[in-house]
Amino acid sequence: MHEYVNWLRHATPYINSHRDCTFVIMLPGEAIEDGNFGNIVHDLVLLHSLGVRLVLVHGSRPQIETRLNDRGIRAHFHRTLRITDGPTLDCVIDAVGQLRIAIEARLSMDMASSPMQGSRLRVASGNFVTARPIGVVDGVDYHHTGEVRRIDRRGINRLLDERSIVLLSPLGYSPTGEIFNLACEDVATRAAIDLGADKLVLFGAEQGLLDEQGKLIREMRPQQVPAHLVRLGDSYQGELLDAAAQACRGGVKRSHLVSYQENGSLLTELFTRDGGGTLVDQEQFEQLREATIEDVGGLIDLITPLEEQGILVRRSREVLEREIEQFSIVERDGLIIACAALYPIADSQTGELACLAVSGDYRHGGRGDELLERIESRARALGLKTLIVLTTRTAHWFQERGFEPSSVERLPAARASLYNYQRNSKIFEKAL
Image (cartoon, rainbow, N blue to C red; front, side):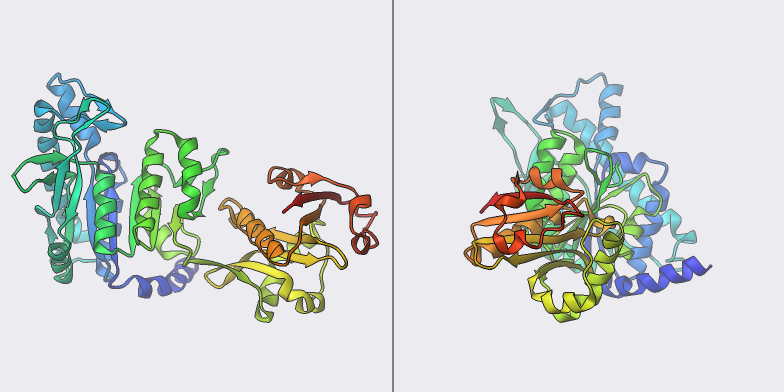
């Protein structure tokens, strides 16, 4: 009971901030077949009851495959997109139509045990997506495979204003009456952008984006996405990540990757500070800035554990207050989660990068690289030519970022006289 009360209290700010916001939520066909889909439906209805304007976009890949197999039709793909000829389009229409009805039924069936018990939940769908053919690519004719041309923003917003949940299928229609098979990721991304949605939520099999060691990357910027796409290749997780980044570049404030297999992943992502998936944002949630005197307390909380482990040199509150202007920090929702300092060395064109620290819960979002870039930019602005760093534990990290081994003899005199031989730090330098 105590944990529930604490969770609810911490969730209250998010309940208030999400009210009257527009969320576009994409559910691939695999999510609808998963055993956890019933829990997802409950969570969606809960969001609706809290005043969130919901646009649901569903996929249909496995359902289409089933129908193709049943009819003995071989599936064809090019560049990960399905080639939709006439017989395949029949299977697509069959699968999408049945899925749409099944989702509407599920949203209605679960009402008796949902937060909306006793209320009438309206689900609206229709021809809100105008599409055009992809055409011929690399000499390959995609036939009835299309891409989104336009989203009926006014029509969808009118239904959202009436407190309806809008359901979009991966089918689009041309002004001449043609039907096109669309990628649900494309529909969701364009809908989020055209509607000016506050969030795009993309369900996938994984908890979110995982790094090479299988650890969850909790947050990243759109500009960090391309490097991960190279690593992920043509995987579906890569498609989701690319869609999330496209949405943010198109004006959507935040995109989220969550798991359809994990019970409660949507609520954990939306109603807790750290979430449960991967957030791609436009830097509103976190801020990289120069420190002020009001940040001293937060800096102490961040660096004290690292000082106790001997990773950082101890700094008293008085020293931090005196040197606070040397620090750059990353602030996340009012919490300082990373810092670094730049100390220009007297009578030289060299600066020292010091006290680079990232909170243990946030070490997989590229914040160390952002701080390093910030410090290097500050150093160049001061006319410094060289950046040095002294470290006992993170030599490889700095070497991977262009720092070369150095020595006490190469340090400027003002810094060499202060070198602590007992600490025996390794010295590295980088030309700016």
